[in-house]
Length: 232
Image 1 (tube, rainbow, N blue to C red):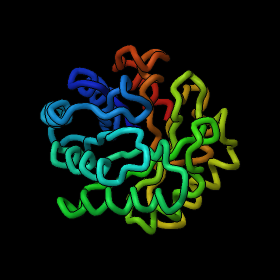
Image 2 (cartoon, rainbow, N blue to C red):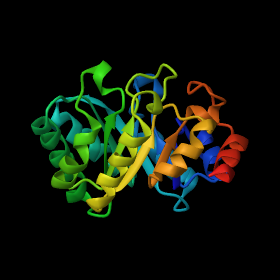
Image 3 (cartoon, helix red, strand yellow):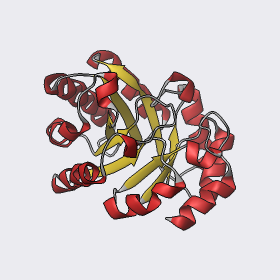
Image 4 (cartoon, rainbow, N blue to C red):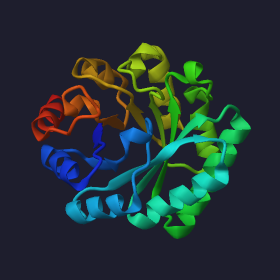
């Protein structure tokens, strides 16, 4: 498993990098689960980290707005992100999801075919009235994305494991892998979730709150990133 850590600024990015994170994921928690940060923050994080680690960027928890999402994805890619993450928050049908993801992928891949698009569904999809993440592997494959991820849409301390069983998550990861895509799990994960995460074995785990001392609105602590990386 690779460790994706989500800083909000260059200082946190350096702490995550020194702690051993494999992917540095720029986001803005004030704007939601996959809240987008500013282009100049993405650039400054990339400048701070250099070519040592790939940079990821969240572009938002989106309604069905494929044009807006495509522009946001292109902006993140131009700013320097290697992974561009989009949340299908208020996207309710397979047709809407495909329209979103295929156009986002086109906008990113036309700029640079090596950049990776991350399609994110939500484990708590029932309470936010969104599409089931279990439908996303097949849709993502058809749309040309590189990574399929699950996160929590509402950040109230409840984790992905409270909304999806180990069996469901194992099937989710297996379906992604069978299609030749990369898989990721995030969503208020805790240190005590590590044994189950190791059993499920996604390609990537995404965290913030866990290395902020349990509060995603606090700051990333390098020593907690080290602790997590060692435990992994």
